[in-house]
Image (cartoon, rainbow, N blue to C red; front, side, top):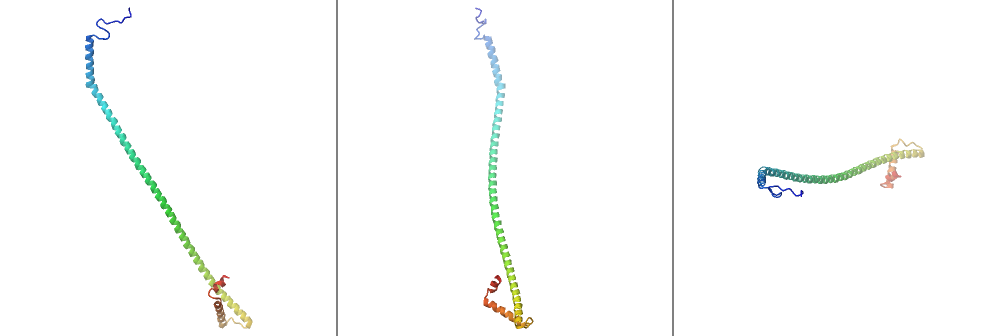
Length: 186
């Protein structure tokens, strides 16, 4: 029977002795009072500070998020405005290109008309010179022919020159008003 629990002489194992109970209770109360008086206020203060710090960080994060959203919105607005401006610039460039092309066409047409008019004037001048040259040539051939037929020299006679001019004028009248241009174009 040596296995039986050893029981203290003054009491049982479950219930302590009264002086131990008094000293234990007193020590507990003293530690509890010290804990509530010294440790608990410090602990509460530390927890409150931590709580405030966390709340401050949450507010800062909230403000930072709002600022980021505001900046993002501003960026998106600027991007939309830049795209719209690029579209306006592109449209304006197209219009300017069309206008420039139209101006260049007008200038080219005006230049072509000027060149055509100048060429017509030059052709008309050359035709008039050719008609005058032909009249002179025909007149001298007619005088030479008449001189050969008559047997006299008519080149010095003013009447011969007047006669040739009159004959050419009569030929022009017989052929009608566009005859010289038809004759020149043949």
